[in-house]
Image (cartoon, rainbow, N blue to C red; front, side, top):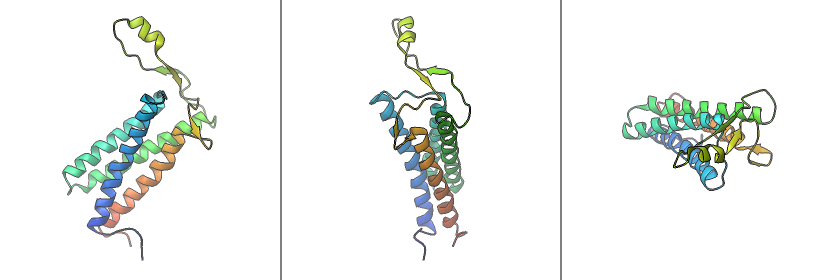
Length: 163
């Protein structure tokens, strides 16, 4: 006896997982950015783009329940975001060379020069925050990849392919 649902219940579970994971990860990223001042580097943005795509696809699947391919594509986008997170974590830990150039967000207002000079500079190869030695990119990998695989399994069980 399996703990995972089958049939329509598995399809709904896959959809809600494909919707919830990127929403939670993006929500956490924006809380980190705007509440705790953890500004994203270039590779952080790449991870966010994948999760934005996953969220959009899952929302479309929510509007069109018969479109199970959208749930699978959302799972693929979550997987891509997690794999980018793995690459980013490897760069942060020095396992391989990555982008080390500084990136910045500039909000141009009344004084563009002041905005440029006051913008935070963030390097992709430096960990801004970690917990138990794992960076945010590492947690993205640890959450996204298993979640994406579970989306694929549940989507398969929704069609009766898995036992």
